[in-house]
Image (cartoon, rainbow, N blue to C red):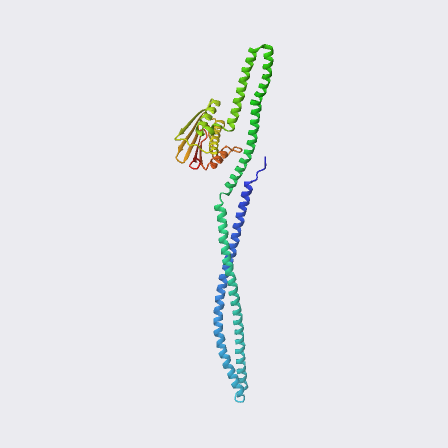
Length: 382
């Protein structure tokens, strides 16, 4: 038995970790966006303050420019009329002009620094704004991915589980095929092959009987041999019928099922099987009729073997464009929500119904029996 290809728990763990990592990344991006936004707002306030200071310093610089011009004019006048003014007046004029010039230079230097700071803030704010926009875009994209992973793919676990079931079912089919081959081989060996071997022995015995005991005894041996051949033929036909009912090709699904269910009832004396066909039966394509036959066969065998049913009612209702099949039993029933390990009967039934493009409903209650309802479209398979 090959190892499972799907480890649902591990895949679930990887999936949850991936979602968690993406969610954490989203949070980190959001944090970067918020920090950038906060820094942007702080820079915005600082920029407004600097612009206000630049405005005021320009006014101050203009005033100092005027004062500087007046002080220079006065200094020039004092210098020209040096003999008229005292040394103290000359000194004061010079100091006043110098102080105004120094102050004007400082103000101009401060204005330059403020302008550089303003330009730097505007450049950084532009970059921050781009970062905020990119972060917001990334958060939106991550949200889309998270929604897709957590909402649109919320059934990924069940889907993988279903894939695993189908894989197990495929493996089970291979095993069942090999087991069926072994069973048929044993049946042929123990049944028809053994009988035919006995026939060969009896033919030798007939010759000796004829020589030793005469015609009468030889005729008795021939009659006995005829019975053995008849039994061998019956066994061969039974094996062929189990493999594929030949009546399907000649009579169709309804007569074949009626005959099959009657045989099942004969083999299971404690079980009563009722078969009803309502409406006008329609011949289906060979592969569809085989699939329908196997579906009913699976339901009935399951009801007898696992459900221990004593009453089974199989009903076909032929409608326009579809046929509705109902298989109802009074067996032990089961909980459809509980999947038994190694039980692939329901999976096989669902597979057959899907191949027929049909729908299957199953209602079962513990100790209250089971009802299988199958609807198959037949407009395309007449």
